[in-house]
Length: 311
Image 1 (cartoon, rainbow, N blue to C red):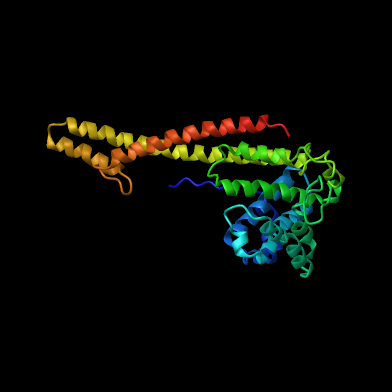
Image 2 (cartoon, rainbow, N blue to C red):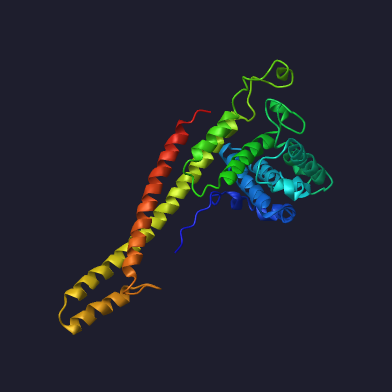
């Protein structure tokens, strides 16, 4: 049995039967590179769940989720050397990257089946203070679906870049996003003509919802760990019983008694386990148990940290 955990596996997507509604849209993602496709799926998953926490109606949630699936569809036409670049983009490369919003919008508008979701592709990089792109929209001029997708997009982009395997230290990522909810007090007089210095880039109400989703994910991760711990404890108990038989076997003087306890050991041995290697496997399980119990402690501490964050 292998322990499995996926940041985004706890989802309500299936409850909406999105497969029927999204088969065509999902086929569009097949043309994206693997990393971008996975990112789109993650952002859609987060967006759907954030809509749930915001108590938005089912139809809007489905619409918003499809917008999120398609938000980066314009990256189909961004040169791979820019799209997949590991280091920071140059100013010129960044300007090319930014065009994925307009490209994605145009793609959706030219396809009747995708046209209803064009706003997600165009506006998911807009910022409440007017510093976003491509249109420099402000506050309520930015559609709610785009505001939600922006938060989900930013969160998943940071998580993917840092390659988290667990939610430990995820609070540091949330601090970055919370920072985007705060006004830019350093703007110059010239910038203040075009930038709304009274608001941040992202909607704090949506970020608060993100925190709830992340806490939900951490609690799910903890529940997965508890299930695995129960498995480990069962295996350790079995192997410890083998070890007891082994000690009794060694203590026997009669061959018949030695064989009796040896046979008891064989009955309890699992696949790929032998009398010669069971102790090594027992130690591995004990170490794994200690590691998982320590991880649960750290994850519980992470929840406490997140609950103390001020948005």
